[in-house]
View 1 (cartoon, rainbow over the protein chains, first blue to last red):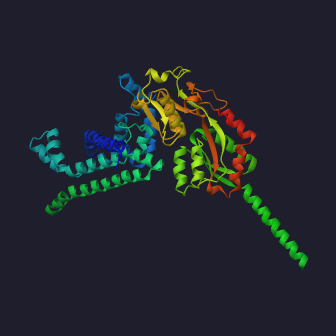
View 2: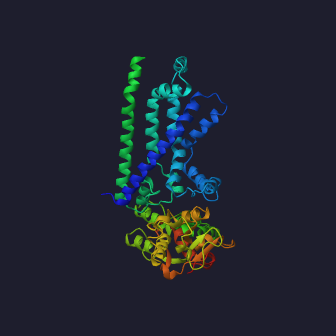
Length: 229
Length: 255
């Protein structure tokens, strides 16, 4: 059976993934909406920045976060000036790292969902005297539902598997920063293969289950839309 | 006819001998080196290559990691420079290293270090002061220096008190990096990491008396993969030589 330290890692990983997904949906929704509708010259740059974590090694993100968020880094000094503690080695630090790391997995599906909403639909709502916020809440959000499901599921699943960033800024503190992937790495490196198998198999099975659930959740709507088209 | 055949055999033997000598001089050794010894080993490696012509491939990491990698039988390492004497002994007992090849190349010195001056006092009283949020150590399961640090905390009765402040690095190299970047105010590292020759040690440190953690005897051992490699054997001999021992002493190790 799994020991209590590994269970703590499971709990912590779930908390991190849920928190990260919630934060990403909050900041990712307006960002994705802006990216989907804007004609600004900054759009390509912003879209590229959002996509960066897809191509950058997580160690690059971890390294810069360690320097920027550290007590001597600009962001670390800002946090301290505001009376906070530097973020490396804290749960909050992992949330910041995960939000950056999982950003494209949430923003891109949302952006695609928003882009798929025809301009005419929103204009029709406008002629019915729906204000911008009303149009967004009652027209755009329901139409983008599959995008939200995909974004939330991918953001959650991707954060579950985060490793490089956590290894660099986490410090492996039980209950605060020792997430599943780091606990697994420790077991492997120490030659504790039985413990490693339990965690690795658990992660693999849950990733599969989450992705199957995503396809099941999103399938009926897509088919329904195709049927009505 | 008979004479010429003898001569031919002699010529072939001489050619074979030359080829073997050439192969030996262009040798290569794959070395796993404990993270605390990475700096001095890079220096020693340069001198070794200049003296013998053998090239070195150095991988630095936590001793415990190398142990499990070597135990799988798939690791390419031919020589292990461990941060303890238990790991080489265990590898010999399990048949992964060559019996009789191990020896102590250095005796390590644990230090409590801060990148800032005036933080760590010479008695290590800072440990009980509570004036720090994070204390970095190498993973005690994987790194002998981490295990030594845990022993120091135990001998001071601080194990419980610092549990929430303990930041565990995957090797002593990462522990050093956590302290060097200021993310951990203090940390247990190896003296060799903060006292490279020719460059004054930055910050402040407490040289932890060996009586608090026992001696860190660092043993080298010839691994099975290097048993038939003369360059590996010659590296182990070179480590015992005066030039190599001078570098080791310059980094603050005893021997």
